[in-house]
Image (cartoon, rainbow over all chains, first blue to last red; front, side, top):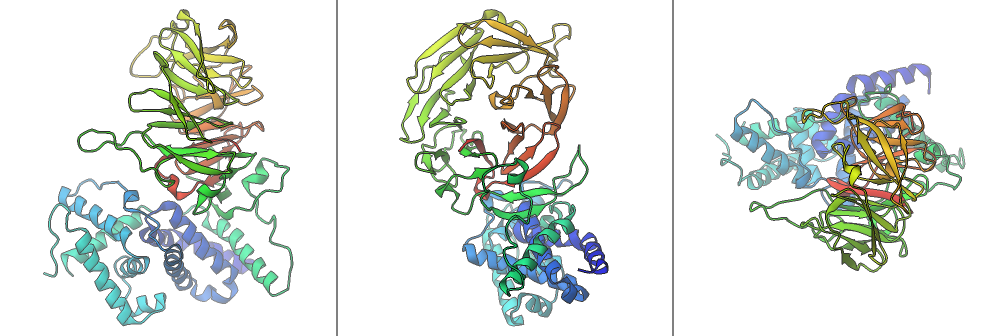
Length: 169
Length: 385
């Protein structure tokens, strides 16, 4: 690869690597799995860099989301169990709030990968339904139904948390 | 936005914030990216036979003469280094999804020999909750005869395969120790008397137990016969950790001695001045070496006897020191307090959760190996294949 493209790749990773890891960690709940996912996506991007460098971030994110869903499908199970949910509590917040968020984190990690991917795109990246659909290679209607199912499942999974979680207000 | 959605947003952000730091991702991606390119080129006939040996692996680090098995290769940056510069080290995954079907091989003819629950799990009534008797959760040992792992009873709080051979040290909730046979699954509990700090001999045939009254007991793993060497004076200068460890020759045992000139205090670890070496045959003091620390265990001695790894102390509270046995000089430090195994090549393996580190005697990280995800929150031991 040309030197200028190499430098461009390095600069891209330096600028966006942490963001990509954040997304991957939200998807996997595991530091190692997140690193692996991002490295895999960046490796694919590097292999095609001359062709994709103008739209690298979208390309890499698409791979991260789709690889994650593929891995989950291939293994046929959630890779991160409820027991592996990070135990770190956040200080300075109300106990109920912390317990609730922890419960939601646990529930998030128990969701099917595709539903989790939809929630990460919508709530972490603030992507629109259309953008999410494009990244995941599905129709907007599918994104909406996946999001709806995921929220229903979360409501069900967290029903036993410290306080009841309300629906729409 | 509903309250549920707000909470989901917060929870997703919490998860994202726990991401690891992005250390040298570009280098790791390049290595893998080039492999992808080469594969693609090979597939279209533009290149051939370029897939082998293109990535440096820890197998090469040990200069293994065998042709190394190809693990699922990944490279990743090292954890935030405290001693060395941020360089990329080889990183491989060991063991597949169904890892129990064959030995999890490590460089240098080593393998994971056992894995078990870490510590004690209590229910709300304070009762011990045994691990499930499964490969994914229970007490699992390498059956070398069968070439695969097997599950043994799960009601043990300590479960440690010998570094070689067929035996496993087990300890139940009453702190009673026993010996299990990895091939037959049979367990023999021992009436070991008053002592602790049990250590496997380098040949995996004898247990070494430190007697509370001073001295040590040897227990033959095959017959459970025992032999005591009473050394009351060995307790006189016992440091905080006061257990005998085997020397790699299997003929001597070692006990650290604190410095009597330094007042003892509960606020800080004892200062160790030297290590006394005793004969296994006679129980007599053979020599005293000027090593300033407590050996981490019997596998903390290099097989050639030149180096020993020492527990953290006041001089180095956050690291495991590597000492030159002859002079007592500290030649390196490994971060943290992992379990260790020193290979005959003088490479040091550290085992901490699912992470195995490979260090040289200067304390420089050379490679990292990830054990299967099932090993998270469990305790793995390594030894000869």
